[in-house]
Length: 324
Image (cartoon, rainbow, N blue to C red):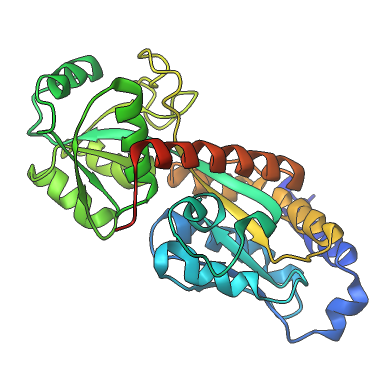
């Protein structure tokens, strides 16, 4: 008897093609699904869509690929998807930037994020408060006291101006009334290197990036910016447990379709992706990235993205965050 995973996988293609109108799909037999990731290869933003594409490939006549189109904080890839045919063959697979944040950062955009057709939120990964081994504080309360005793002297790294790590630090300073110095980097890797070396003090990083360095004793994770503890680091408290319930900041990864995509198409893709996210090997591989599978419906996705866009717009406005 086939396993539940094999049975589920065997039905994904039939269900998706039926909902996408089999005749039209066969007429475009050379077409393939393209998940455009608006960031460079490597890292969680690239890894999670590749896991999903691997399982969806058989459901499309021409297969499925991930196509990396980095640049302009995700706006280059976002623009390409925005202008694509609304036929279910080209989707944006992205963290929040071009979906819910960039419209509050960039004075001019070549596309309108409010017009995306939501498909699903694949997963979320919590941001975590990471400190250099040179920082004397051993827990969050000691760290907060240390920061307050050195106003304007403690440094925090980010992946760049306007990135989730920058905005999470801005939210932290808003909620705690602290003042730190921003040191932007070009990505996670150089920021982590300088954090380990003591060139910067603090980094609000994605859990999946910092987890191995924490376990190796090269950095220390002191708090998780989620509403529950991570199963990968069960001893590390959430900010809510530490008295900061509004300090919630997760990096999420969503699929969005071009404007004009029929709702039936978005619904069909979401159902197929939800089936993929139930597969045991997919759940295991997501967990290795520190990611929690979500598979939100299009309606849930729209509401979630709206709330995230409003939250970060407020942080950007109050903290005077800019991409300059």
